[in-house]
Image (tube, rainbow, N blue to C red; front, side, top):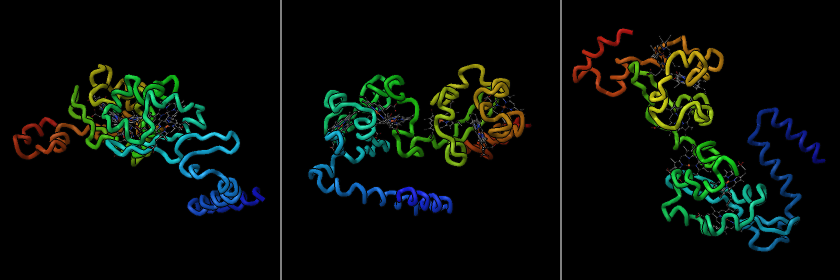
Length: 253
Ligand code: HEC
Ligand code: HEC
Ligand code: HEC
Ligand code: HEC
Ligand code: HEC
Ligand code: HEC
């Protein structure tokens, strides 16, 4: 019976109606489990309770911090799935009170990188590090994405990189570049000394993708990346006035 349901759902999914199929899946499961749900104790509505192990796994709803950025924490993932006990976090790392750590003002990316709060475990060995997989904790990636373009002016003026185009328009994850290809710091590559066309042709930096297959090749469409002196001045909003016309004559390419 379940099989036939799945088949029907499959057909609906094939028809392209994902929105319709999702509630159907939930409905068929809730009818099977609602009996057990009714017998459970009152506070089970707020807490995750497992009939089989007769254990509670902490608050059912995600803890969500809205400021300064949106972050969600799931008890289920940490207790029921990863097998951590309550005491691994409470109360040495976190109080049993949503918002307490944040109100304290110390729960920042910097303190986590020093091994505090989430960083106690999210250090790259017990669990993934806080300088990776930004979007698994941050549920709103766009608020983390730099709005202003990254512009390099050395040795040639000027090369431009837009986050929005890469993350929103082309759907790349932060990790596609912030996995070691680029540091999350403006100007870092420029300081490294080998941020050259040759490096790009060798598949480094932008050349990791701009190789003619994932994205247009680095030895084509020079002007797409190199906006030149003229483009730079226009971007900085100082063309036309302040003697910019003088500079423009140098933008010969
Ligand atoms: C991996 C860490 C971690 C583990 C393990 C963990 N918690 Fe939590 N818990 C948190 C965090 C983080 C908060 C929010 C604290 C804050 O915002 O300052 C929290 C908050 C709570 C709250 C307060 C919720 C509210 O709405 O105010 C309760 C209750 C709670 N936890 C119970 C438990 C119980 C019971 C267990 C074990 C079954 C458990 N926790 C295991 C991290 C954890
Ligand atoms: C393990 C979870 C986790 C990961 C992974 C993570 N963050 Fe955070 N981040 C937090 C928490 C928790 C806060 C503090 C609460 C809040 O902002 O709502 C925070 C805060 C921030 C802030 C606010 C200012 C500051 O410095 O604290 C920024 C910006 C930020 N994160 C960026 C990032 C970026 C970029 C990445 C990926 C490199 C990342 N975070 C990865 C959990 C995480
Ligand atoms: C006591 C250790 C511990 C602490 C503290 C901790 N985590 Fe985790 N977390 C884990 C483990 C273990 C996993 C599962 C292994 C993994 O994904 O690397 C995990 C997984 C996750 C995941 C991945 C969920 C998925 O989609 O697979 C997220 C998101 C997360 N933690 C967020 C947080 C945030 C936010 C905090 C701080 C509020 C935090 N964790 C604090 C141990 C911890
Ligand atoms: C296609 C590559 C690419 C992707 C994808 C990408 N970035 Fe970047 N990011 C860069 C480059 C390049 C820099 C500048 C590094 C340099 O100058 O050395 C940068 C710099 C940054 C900086 C530092 C800005 C500053 O002013 O110092 C932050 C923060 C950042 N990225 C966040 C993110 C987040 C969050 C995501 C995912 C939503 C993301 N990036 C996705 C390439 C990328
Ligand atoms: C992780 C892969 C990846 C990396 C690394 C990467 N790009 Fe891209 N980029 C893409 C993809 C995919 C596109 C869209 C496909 C195309 O236009 O060929 C694109 C498009 C572009 C465009 C055209 C955008 C538009 O609005 O028309 C520019 C300019 C650009 N990238 C510059 C850069 C620069 C400069 C770097 C290095 C600082 C870089 N990219 C690094 C994947 C990447
Ligand atoms: C995918 C983006 C991209 C494309 C396409 C591209 N460049 Fe570059 N170019 C860069 C980056 C990034 C740098 C290093 C940062 C800087 O010099 O400001 C650079 C640096 C240079 C430099 C100075 C360093 C060196 O390697 O000598 C020259 C000259 C140059 N590019 C010429 C070109 C020419 C000519 C083309 C077209 C055949 C081209 N570039 C196409 C991104 C690109």
